[in-house]
Length: 144
Image 1 (cartoon, rainbow, N blue to C red):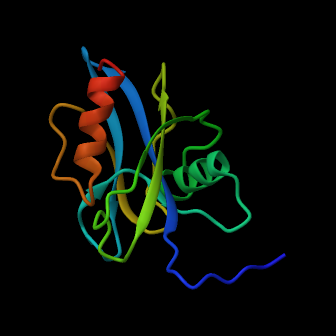
Image 2: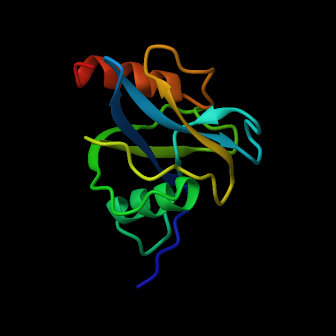
C-alpha cells in the first residue's frame, strides 16, 4: 500500500552513544565526519534509517559501518527533533546507547567516517549537529 501526502515529511536518523569506563571516567566513541555537513567535525556514529529497517537494526548497522564495532546491544535513549538540528533538512534522530564493560576491538573508521576515537565525556571535541546537547542530556539522565 502506498500513500502520497501533500505535506513534507521528515527523514529519520539514528545516532549511537557507546560508553566505556576508562581511568575513573566514562569515555564516548565518536567519529570524525568525512562528508558535509560538518565535514571534519566529530559526531556520534549514526545515519539515515532505511525504509524497511527497524530502528535498532539501523543503529547497529550504522555503528558497524562507521566504527567497525558489531553485535553491540543498544538501548533506545531519546528522540531529538528540533527543527534546524540538521542543515540538510527536517531530520528526526532516535538516539541509542550502550555501556561496554571492556575495551572492544579497536574501532576503525569506515563508511563516511575519517576516524573513530574515544573521548572523555566531560572533555569532548566540538561536536557536529546537536550532539553536544544529546551528550549533555545523557550525562544528566544516565547519571554519568
